[in-house]
Length: 61
Image (tube, rainbow, N blue to C red):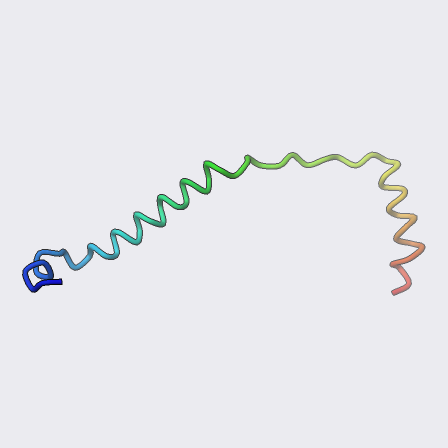
């Protein structure tokens, strides 16, 4: 870089470029990722089976 170009560049130019890059990356990531996942509700049979499995295996640990 020449001395003239170094004097013309603003001291905060590098920070502004980094922030702009982070902003663009964040927007691109948000555009590509899917929305929030929907939680599935467990039925009473699933809860009873889980409780039975817990009592048979995990509660003795």
